[in-house]
Length: 247
Image 1: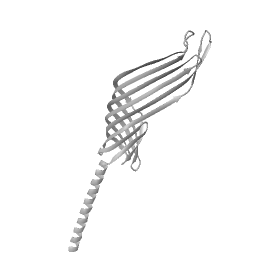
Image 2 (image 1 turned 90 degrees about the vertical axis):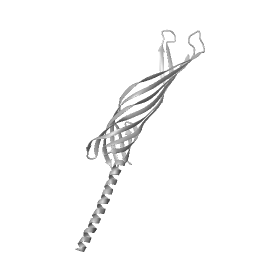
Image 3 (image 1 turned 120 degrees about the horizontal axis):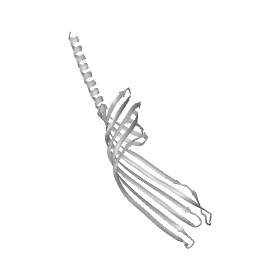
Image 4 (image 1 turned 135 degrees about the horizontal axis):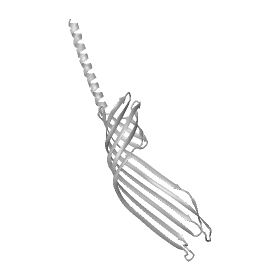
């Protein structure tokens, strides 16, 4: 009887220890699952990097930045002609056109994300939150034209700067690829109030004769201006595909 009682006590102690350890393990797993973070990289349809953190088992927060860059530099040649009823009957000219364009845009967003429908390792979600963005664009067009009587050079420069702030809404789907790595696809909508500054300048230089009574005539003409605009801009963003990695 004493042996059975001792065995029962030992079994109860072992069961209590096992229960305590399992409870601690379960609590640890729950805490980890709620505090784990993810990094999301948008790769197709735009570049973006976000950090995702858990709020509840079905909701998250996401903060991050989007960036786009563009550079274009083109040059070539052109051939023009003019027909006159008086002599000379035909005039041809050659030109060297050049076009350069540089632009970038940068935005920050902070979203509250809610799970919608879950099926196996895939679920849909939606998010809403504020967004702030800034973009800058500068383009120049330069062309030099020459023939026997004169040469001219024309250069146009246009610059646009846009600052904007407003709400951003998106809907997406996320599916597990391999352990700790998921693929995502999202489409977004924004309604941003923006402030735009546009400036332009033009320089035209002429060298040559401008008629039978003028020789070695040359002049330069410079024009330009600046304007300010503001108002709402509503945009539907294309589908963006990225990877989500657990960290």
